[in-house]
Amino acid sequence: MAIEILMPALSPTMEEGTVAKWLVKEGDSVKSGQILAEIETDKATMEFEAVDEGVMGALLVAEGTSGVKINQVIAILLEEGEEVDSQPTLKPAETAPTVQTQTSAKVSAAVPATVAAPTPTGGARVFASPLARRLVLQKGLDISKIKGSGPHGRIIRADVEAPTAASTPQERPVSVPTEATMARSADVSSVMKIYSDRDFVEVPLDGMRKTIAARLTEAKQTIPHFYLRRDIKLDALMALRASVNEQLMSRGVKLSVNDFIIKACALALQTVPYANAVWAGDRILRLKPSDVAVAVAIEGGLFTPVLRDADKKSLSSLSDEMKDLAGRAKNRKLAPHEYQGGSFAISNLGMMGVDNFDAVINPPHGAILAVGAGVKKPVVDHNGQIIIATIMSVTLSVDHRVIDGALGAEFLGAIVYNLENPMSMLV
Image (cartoon, rainbow, N blue to C red; front, side, top):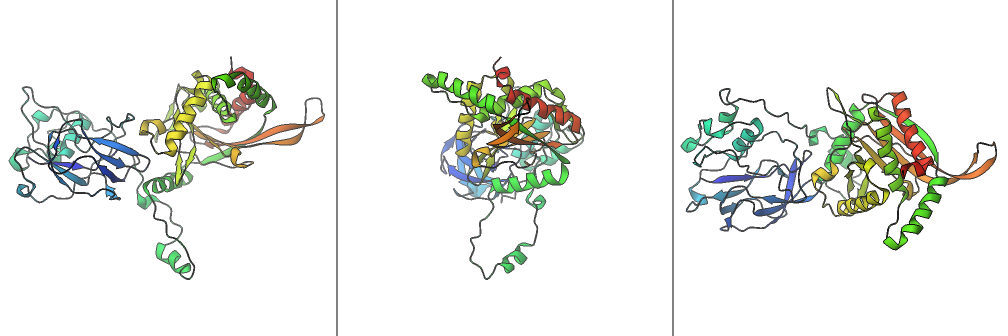
């Protein structure tokens, strides 16, 4: 019986994808685990594996086709001897909730278009739609005990969702923002009319830009932001950095100010553990590890790769890991588990000459630190004398549902202390 291969949900924010490249042709034999295609998501281009075996009967979506919705049929896999013409007319694929999964660099663990489900003892084949198989896995059911009502006894979605089939509660789906939730200040036609007599280039929104628009609109509309600002004296840090870099030059190690900022924030999350938290809808999750996300600008958008257990890593290790993540982010080669998670983020525009700014919290994070440039300014020292010092302005954007004002001030104070006393980060 023909198996419909559907556009997979390769990340929680993915609504549609692009078949960047087919790695099989019609008529090719397909084995379980074989790479079928490269799928371009809203964040990256990822490999998509086959689960079932058979012969590729039809490729229904051409290479380069964009806007293919999740669970839309993109190909047909046949058993030996079957023909596409002998199959019933295909209907649009049923839609199912997408569930967040952790994914390896090769995406072998991502939610595939067809998912293998438990088979009865003895190895007898069970005929079920790809959607039904996914629902079976999500619900933790025994597929051999479900009676199919489809053609030739095939198990379909309705059979899995029937009251008699349910034995465990279904996993709660991840809320994925849709295009309808994106902010629109004016109707498209009215805006086009205003500029009808001016030259312009119309730029369609790709998946990444749609996701950014939806998530940041959600953030500003639903998260009660408040802002805490501090100036940080960087002279001790700059002197220590210069000394360390000189000693490590032979090893090819060069630490950046951003490396020190990452370490300072990771340690502060341990010093003030109640600030190491995220908003989870109807509860707060307090994390134990310091997983710090860092914004990386790429063409057309940005990534926030996460440095896990950053408090436990040396500055040189953080520097190497950050360079690797940033490099692969610019090429859109990060796997979802590398840019999801964390409780806190850093956005640094200091290297671009920005003195200070307010960053938007990336949900479900509890806070984000906006970092400005280090600038030489006259300041009054502890002896009451006016001296020239390197001052960096930072702004902590805080989710008031997660962190109150006094706690946010304590957390920011811990960050400032670490950066103004950098030797404490080396102990």
